[in-house]
Image 1 (tube, rainbow, N blue to C red):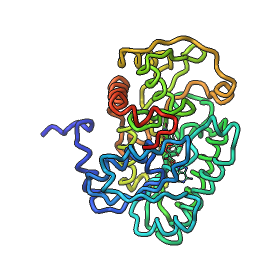
Image 2: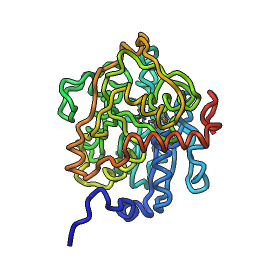
Image 3: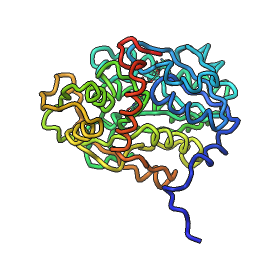
Length: 348
Ligand SMILES: NC(=O)c1ccc[n+]([C@@H]2O[C@H](COP(=O)([O-])OP(=O)(O)OC[C@H]3O[C@@H](n4cnc5c(N)ncnc54)[C@H](O)[C@@H]3O)[C@@H](O)[C@H]2O)c1
C-alpha cells in the first residue's frame, strides 16, 4: 500500500481524538490567534474557556467568536490578576497563552505594559498552574522578534537572541520563565516563536501591528500602500490556519514539551512582492516607495525568515496554505465583515 503523503492526511481527526472532551483555556481568547484557535477547538468537542481583558488598541473583538459565542465561556479579566488565574487554571488540560502586549511600536514609547502583561502575566499564570493544576500543559505564542537581527538565514532555534525592543525582550523573558516552570517545577510547556501571522480576525483598526492585514485593508479601500525603503527586506508570512494547526499539533505532541520551536513559512518573500500580490489578489489599491518612519527604522531587524526544520522533524507540522491563497481568504473575510473591524472603536 502507498502511504498517504503527509500533506494530505486529515489532521482534524487526529486533533479531534486529542481534544474531544478536554478542558482548554485560551488567554487572549478574543484576539486574532486565540479566537481562531477557539473556532477550531469547539467543533472538535473541546470545552473552551476564553480569558480576555479587552485592552483597547489590541485585537480583542467579540465578533471574532460570533459562530461559537454560545459554546464557550468568557472571563473578562487580566492575566495579572492572580485570584482569577488561580481559579481559572483548575481542571484545564491545555492552556494556550495568547494574551499579552502585542505592539512592538507601542513598546518603544511605553515599556510598562510589556513588563506588566508579558512578564508578570506569565509568572502569575505559571505560578497558578504550579499551585493549582501542575498537570496542565501550557503553550505559548512567542515571537520571531526574540531573535533580533539575523546572523544567518534561515534562522533556527540555536540562533543568538539579541532583540531590539522591549516587546521582544519581554517575550524572551516570558519564554525563559516558562522554561523554568517546565524544567524545575514540572509544569509542561511548549514554547513557540511565531513569525508574522496574517488572516481573518486580526485587528484592522490601526497600522501599529499586523502589517499584512493592514496592507490588505489599504488595498480593499483602494488606497496607496507605502513600501518602506526599497521593499527588498525578506520575511516569512504565515496564514492563521497553519498557525492554529501548529498550536494544536505541538500541544498534542509529547516530544514538543519543554522545547522552543519556530513556527514560520518555509518560503521568504520581500515586502514589495507581498504588496504586489495583495494588489493582484484584491484587484484594488496601488503602491509607492516611502522612507522608513523613525520608529520603524529603529526596530527594523532586516531580513528574517524562519528555519522550520525542527518543528517539521519533531512534530510533523508544516504549512499548507500558500501566500496567494492566504491573502485571498483574508481579503474575502474582510470584504464580508468589514463593519466589525474598520471602525477605530470596533470590538464587536
Ligand atoms: N499576530 C502575530 O503576527 C504574532 C506574531 C508573533 C507572536 N504573536 C503573539 O501571539 C499572541 C497573540 O497575538 P494576536 O495577534 O492574537 O494579538 P491580539 O491583540 O489579536 O490578541 C491578544 C489578546 O490578548 C488580550 N490581552 C492582552 N493583554 C492581556 C492581559 N494582560 N490580560 C488578558 N487579556 C489580555 C487582548 O485584549 C487581545 O484580545 C501575543 O502574545 C503576540 O505577541 C503574534
